[in-house]
Length: 298
Image (tube, rainbow, N blue to C red; front, side):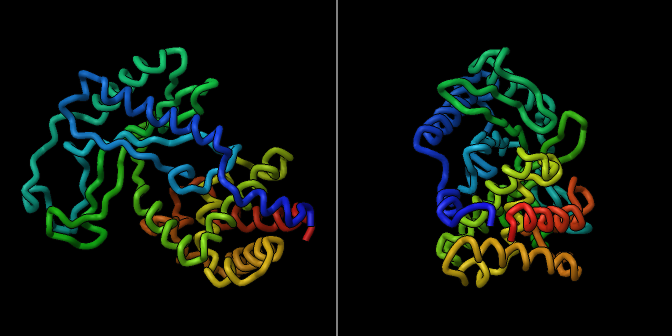
């Protein structure tokens, strides 16, 4: 085994207190930026943290923070077949996504300075300094998905987010479902689900650094979703992390080899893990697991 048991144990831990404080500073500054904006004061906005920090699976190399600035007073919808907004008593929104994003970006620049703010394809990126970490500000509208549960009640829907990337691609996510499902699995596994996820992320990061894996394709998000699909009895069934990691790799690799991954979901369970819109495939994941096995010298 390439890494000792004590190293794996150390990798189960979250980021340090110092890093945690810098993350909190970042979140507070983003909230302050939005609250101080004259252009945003009449809009109903919810600001929440998403991604690995919100899911408590972040490691030091991935300690950047994703903050969603979600508009609720205007929202996107998905209706069951044959239904439209008039069936739910909704009216057309009065602000475009592009205009909303412009206002949020202006507020972020006013707070952090234009030299520290750039446009990523899917987020507004804030450069770190000694006080705060790098941040991705995701500007989104709330999504009310009635279709997924076939609801005709305007107050009963699955909540998600939707926005448009700089390349004009529609992006839909369900970050709150992801967080809720992850918490439940963590409770069911005596907190070992998130411990194991952090270990896998550390190994993935080391493999990226050593040129053993494509970090763009094999993302931190994919790693978390793979562990989501490891049965609870495997996560809890062994007395040490060396064996737990080994058995998780074996299960995931064999399941993909046998074609059993087709029903696997992302942590939110609102999308299939290997749906065509993703930058990874089942074969990519299988190759990653094979390479990880060899990398760890099992």
